[in-house]
Image (cartoon, rainbow, N blue to C red; front, side, top):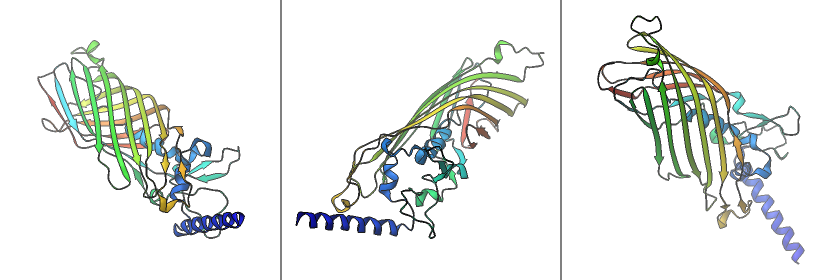
Length: 321
């Protein structure tokens, strides 16, 4: 009798999971997606595009110019970067050394002419249709005697399945132009500065099936050399070269609610994934329009392309340079 009960239980679990997967029309189930955050799944490539994109967002918008004045200045705004979700974000190569391309969390669903029970975790239905990746944050800065301190942050309360979001960061920049500029020098419109920036961000995601959230802790840092040239007083053209590092650590103990116990009963995220780390470069233009409006637009590349759209930014310089 015990054997029969076990067989019936297994049959009910298999039936329930098949129905659950069928309802998603070939997309990954919530459980399939979440298990990719476990190191034992050996599917770090499935979730890597998350930190690839978030890392580039966090390492953008640190500077509003290569030139930093001697007098005190205050700046504030809400910068954000736009990062297109490309084909490279939607597939990754199998870890067995083959060239087999497997869908990522941004990838496609299982097609009707395919065997959907082949062990492949397909893409997330919601993330698959995302054309761009971004999120804004509040930023302010203070500069004095050619040094600049930048602070940024953002906090969101629990909203639906997003159970928490916070971001904080700090950056330090120093301008060297004042050391060599002379009134009649040919390079008086050229400036060079060095910047270090650090970000820390945490996202908590709790699907309706679970009692506790998936926690993603993300770290991003950058070190950049900024070369700026002012053809006119109201505009500065900047070229940046540097190095960035990004990483995402997953944690949590995700226990399912009683009505969903036919799925995997517990998931323990412990995956650590490095994002786009290495050489980066960019081209930006900063404008001074009126007394305070100071927008910055540009293009950056660090493993993938991103666009700086720092349109809501303001700066107040006290004193003349």
